[in-house]
Length: 430
Image (cartoon, rainbow, N blue to C red; front, side, top):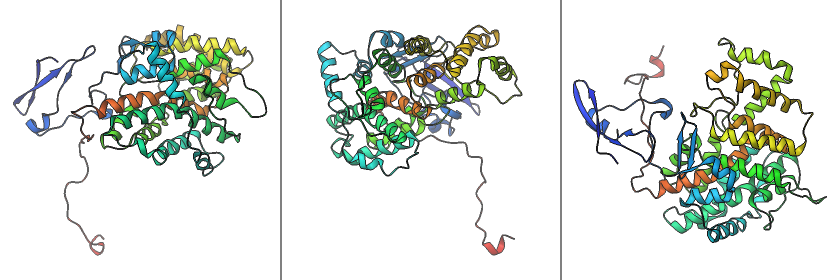
């Protein structure tokens, strides 16, 4: 950390604030004592200019299009590793040795079963319940089934809770999907890898044998890696805020899932697909391109550009390749939605308007197309996002719990309501 300072002048009084430096990325001005010294807070809607925590997990440089997990570029992890290896890296800080990976994979696989009473829990939902509604409820309910891993002061219990959530999330997600389409639940199988197991639980039926397509399994595994963590985004901040109160880990992850459900966050890939459905056919693309360029038109192209990345989303490059691998493997040639997506992608990459404004196709654009091609309904897209992001949430939560400087989250406000006034009885209110 640097010993340099920044000076701020308030009402003619100068206050020196320490400047802290990270390993890479911008430095931060430590304003934790600003109120005590000046009687003022800072005003930062959305916390877009505020570092709420110190973390060693994920680094993003939006201007350069860089995403690192524990220092490793996302493209290298997605290209050469698998999702459980990435989970280990996010949780423990280093890539596992062969023995460590074998042990980690074994422990996760042996935790994939959920308590059998969860089956009855599902019957309380309406038949047409949204899978995300089911996930929020079921993950929160895990704390009612696993009392032996809710003491956050015990490192061993924290580890067990972490393993349980990573292992059981695919099972719960598959159960949510099966319930929504009226099919029987499919139990996990220990001889399958993490992603193949999930695909089988989603798409197998008792009436016939199901064989996992390795190309689809690898593609979905890559999607999971790309979504595993993304620094202090809305849902991760929600998990940390909930955790700062001492809430149990299952409750914290349920809070993260609830936040992720929003269309501006995890629902963006679903929104991108709905936009493609609205366009309908490739011949209507020029009409919608014109609408997107018109400032007075409310239409917005979903799946293009990113809040953080002002360059090409590094995850989108990998996702683009994965999307085309899946489409080629499945031989899909007569799907108008996918035809619209491929044509729109080509136009957006070449059109001066999009290039100038850096509105490149983002990961949500490609992942929505890929998941649809694999057979997932749009209602499941955010569920899959939650499944993948669970490890990032847990890693961030664990880091926060182990941080000795951690305090309960308590943002302040700029009050603009009525000043103090006296109570008036009903008879006197006119």
